[in-house]
Length: 153
Image (tube, rainbow, N blue to C red; front, side, top):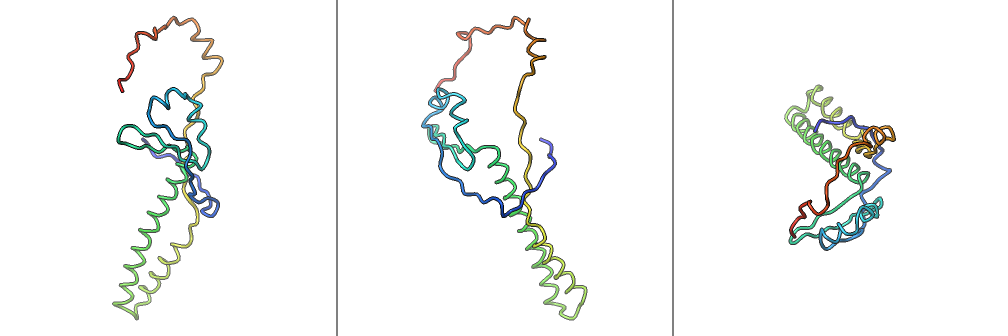
């Protein structure tokens, strides 16, 4: 998957306060509930799907993109702290070196400059235009439901 351009959102506008949402004890239970089951997951909720011995968590795309942004920011800070520590070690070894002190000051100030979270835009909804419906209306593709194999649970 190719990287997408990122927009940014202020870090102070969102915190990962996720609450439990709907829960399904089997895939069959989720399947029978249909698409309305997934639509019932609102912003800030984490739905749970349990299949045999595995548990899956489902999020809205908006919350997922925020978590991805938060993880990216944590990674950036971790790398930045490593650079500041290296600069501090240089200053400790050479306390009279003005270039080392300047490097330490610049690297430390760079950590505090960005208070923005990168957020990837989500996927567009799949929609068929009226022109496409009209164009393919004459296709006689009929798949009998009885002929479709069903998953074995």
